[in-house]
Image 1 (spheres, rainbow, N blue to C red):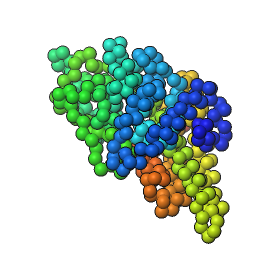
Image 2 (cartoon, one colour):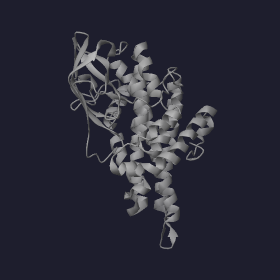
Image 3 (cartoon, one colour):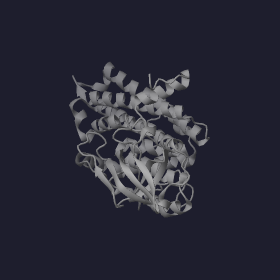
Image 4 (cartoon, helix red, strand yellow):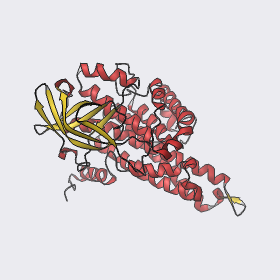
Length: 389
């Protein structure tokens, strides 16, 4: 969609307003000039490129769901376009951006007190404070309502006990938005890094999402001041409000990864010669490239319409599920086809495809698995729940 990377067969960019076009172009340029040159080395080492965070803040990439507090609110579609461009660069960078916006700043803005907003949002907008979203647990992922993490009332606040797993930004976060049960009801709490009883341990030996600072968070008799509870949460409904924003970002980021795989394969196929002719001249290779483009185009149209529905307040959770399920599913197929076209070079980090292919394995699980979204849609169109069948 971006003018610098015009994989846009149906001219979706012509439907964007000027601000959205400029925003996407700026993020795309940032990805090409500042992310691409360093990301392979960070992926190899399993580290996050922390030097990019101040630059992202300078570009106004933090606080896109927030009005005021040093933030400039953007449309959902603009957020999705940014996720597409960042996903084209690296899923770990896209995840950091999504979590900071949709799962950390948004809940503080939507459910926090005025004091909490003033304390955290300006710092987070400047990139001086990073947030994480602590929901999934070692034994509870697809069923967040079953969480075991518990908060109990004590003098001056609350005591938190439990564990949270697969927490993006967990090891670099200054504040964690932690979801726990208080008297059987799900509440959100702000837990600052360094709080007694709170530890964040990196999840090691990942072969996917290697640049993402993913953590296991542990809370053992962790005291939380009373004014650190988000006062306006409404149980699991508030959790899903945050996840709906994030899932749209995942759907868009997956398209970005697919675009990079397609472009890499297309350019390689035009240059690589076998039997004295470019492999792009072979019918089987052209079939693969065409199938990639078709699925990217369909996914772009889904994302565009879903973004507009979100901006109009008309999108349903089921529509978001369809986008996440379809776009990630097709991106995985595209990455595999691209790796096949590249042959042996397809496993080299310098060609990027293998990095996207490995990352998409994690993307297929986070924010709801393919199966969970499939059953969500099945229930919506039949009126019958098959989750427990």
